[in-house]
Image (cartoon, helix red, strand yellow):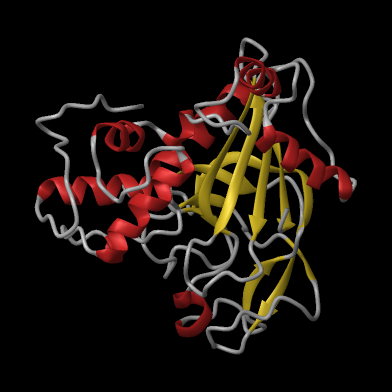
Length: 306
């Protein structure tokens, strides 16, 4: 949900400003850019790195690029990024261009560029796509980035579905499809090595259940999955070699109970994990809505890039 702009709470701030307003600004930048680590980025000082990210945000939003957080920049930062509809045109586009952009993001137009891009990637691999008339038939798609840094949430989870009104919704969230440092280097749960999920479509393999008996998640109880095993105990994950197929408890869950988690650490031994608790709550809410309509088995698709 968006926060309203208040000039007293959100004053204009420039380079080398310090204080709570800068902390708020930095946290909002982290919300809009998933590659920013709040534990490292948020320091309460508007230094060169923060100024660079403000300019980056201003360029994306077609604002004046000056590195200064004024009213327009604050208003954009305070908006919920999940409410932002990607558009191929800027704010100064002509009326016909604006109409074409709205049409491209309408239900008839396929839900916008984000949904189209993911669906095209699924079609290229001959994977199933759920885009019928029924609401909350979820497309749950993890995208693994080949250049992911070890122990970081550098991947993306895409959720695409139709709501009660038939509108196609497409959201994306910071995520990991790889195990973290603890189960890779410190404690191997399997003598063959830590599990790394093999890309593919695992149809109707996931059900609502308790992750480790603790909280509701999507759990691997409907079918087998395929994994590689890495027992090198290094920070270079070995995504290859022998493929193991079985019931490995590769669940879809969150990291910490609240907030944003900086590093994967012990939060994944091969599971697919949300970085932000609030994003995971969206998935579980949608999964329950789907289950209430009789679709209680979920397909998870893992892709190597789009």
